[in-house]
Length: 89
Length: 313
Image (cartoon, rainbow over all chains, first blue to last red; front, top):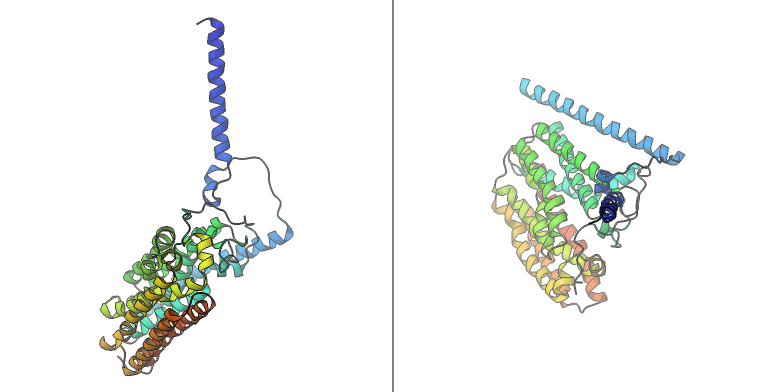
């Protein structure tokens, strides 16, 4: 094999590897199932501003989440108190 | 007949939702409130029918809340998994995920969070047996039924019916810390009631199930076979409905309701069998579906009233 042939062969291999990488990236970026896609996220640097309606909805949901956590804490506290009262009786 | 193409997973995506738009109502809808109300009712009957009085009502009510939340959580997980077929069926396409109001990932997180919440609260408020049974119920409905049975076999709701039948056992276990044979008699009533209830629905919604590729009995084995099986289960249900009387947890008031409603159920199933295909069958199936709800409510209400009236210890 001549030097030129070797270089051509090496360039071909590089191109093939590059192609494989591109294909992997494309695979990773391919929109998949909503849930599992999170693991394949490829940063694009793009951001999306929420509309005022969406911001309101997000605030409502945050309050709901806070309520859920407070309800959980309250229930654990109430159950503990009720059980202790039962034991005292 | 059943189309060859049975969806093997969540291949066709429903409309992509905007994560910020889901309101409180949409998240409540994920919990299947109507199913929840039936679960609360049957679990309450399980609690009340258990021997001995309920000494701590606040804890019993918290336990009931946990059972209800657990049932809702399994509903959310079911909607997460079934979003693709829900988008196809007329009965389910307005659910929050296919309608684009709640993203699938959020429904999954919501269901998982509530499942843990419900099981932990029930373990604290009642006991580990009740909590374990609730965890099993959620697992059975969300994983065994939704992920494996529903798209694989026309016996899906026969086996999957176990999940819906467990709440009275969970309620009984929450009240007593045990799950004896009497509790399983209540389980048996709901378990045997489930196939005729759902097959009646699937008869007049056969097109929906066919389009979604779900192998329900009418689109796999045909209408006549389904009607015969509905009758067979009705004949089995009528005597099982009377079982609580023989376990000494119900009196003859309940017994009379169970016998009369059982006979009526069998008559309705016979009537359905005799109808020609088309609109008469659909109408009779619709009536049987409605009656099946009345049947279960009546039996459990009769049991509840007998216990509240102090007829049983």
